[in-house]
Amino acid sequence: MPGADRTTKKLAQRIDLNYFKHPHPFRRWRFWLSVSIPLLAILWLAWYGLTGNRRVYSGGQLSPAHAVLTAKCDACHFELAGFFSAKASDRACLACHDGPIHHANQAFTPKCASCHMEHRGRLRLAATSDASCTQCHANLRTVGTETHFARDVEDFGTGHHPEFAAVRPGSIDPGTIKLNHAVHLKKNLAGPNGPVQLDCDDCHRPATSTDAWRFGSAQPNAPLAAQKSDLPVVSKSDLPLIVSARAYMAPISYAKHCAACHGLQFDKRFTEGVPHDTPEVIHAFVVQKFQQYIVTHPAELREIAPGRNLAQKPLPAPVRVLTPPQWVTERVGEAEELLWRKTCKQCHALSFSAGADLPAVAKSNIPARWFPHANFNHDRHRLVKCVECHAAPTSQETSDILVPGIRTCERCHHAGAESAESRCFECHTYHDWTKAKEVKGGITFSGLVRDN
Image (tube, rainbow, N blue to C red; front, side):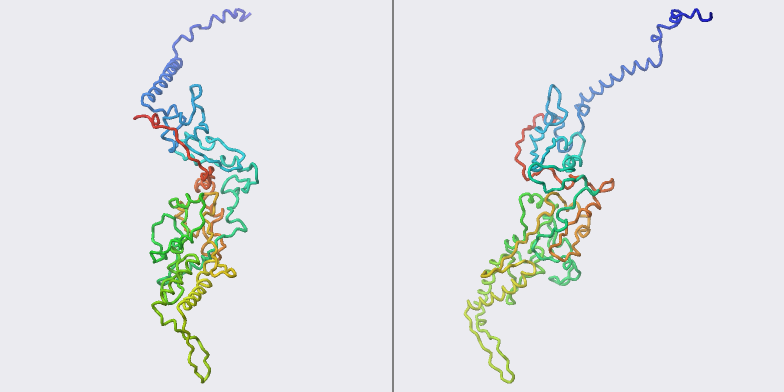
């Protein structure tokens, strides 16, 4: 039969047992690649070692804040069994930074490295992702007392952020200083030297501004107490923000912003006005001025009292002769009637108690910060016109809150490549730095950086 001689043995004899010993291009390439690639890798590592460049051994470039620790891995990473731990422990972070607790009632405290991720190059460690915040605030839970904060905040710019508390329905400006912004922004206002047109920066400037005030006091010896009375009550937590370079506006002061237009004259006999101070200081000032005046003008002690003019019967006008104390008392009473009932009352809320000689002036109560749980920097927004965010030209009531609402901010801060930053860290900070404690450093210069 055909093929009967095709046995397994005969077929096996046809196989070339030296096939893999014969030269072949692919086998030559495989040999040289298996030799050259490990050799090149060794040379590459040797080159980095000889030049002192540890980039190949590092997890990535450190942020600018920690760049000096590039050669000091053990400053953040603890060595275990000959290897450094994958992530820096909280103990290593707290050795240099006292990250105060976020809130006393927080139910969860994340690890430092879960929010501040290093080895990502020249990025700010404070520029955390929204996920770091929303892991709690998307469904906020607290321990102990009920929270007064929004429970479901997911992001900014898509409707998942509550309206700012300062401008929610029912909120009013707690300040007691009467001011009509719309009137002050009208054209051709009566100024000290003719018609003027006020601008926002005539009253609102950063604390570090050195420009002269257009309508400040011309008196170099304005009493210090007068300026203090204009300052809002500032808590300890507000101070670092109020005095920061150009972030926040300086408090309004009568001596700097109002004195040139709103004088405090009290009698035609004097060109100067009373000091912008407490009623007690003003009263003492008025008494002293009249006492000094009557000494040099004794003729005014003889006064002609107004009489009745009868037809065809002219009568001699009655004459009064007063003692200096009587004259001073009457003139002081007239001057203070003008001050308390008109001049001071135009701006301040005064209350008159029964039996009290002087009125009580309500505290100005101007808020130092409208957003106590967020940060805002005016200097970063200085290219935008003030009225784009603050509706001052249409505000006629003191109770109007002129800070912008969330919709105004969303016009620039929203998702997208062509928008301004809108992540949580842009306005909020996690650590409560008002509760920061002193930290005693433990790092020495020895071994901190490599010698070049």
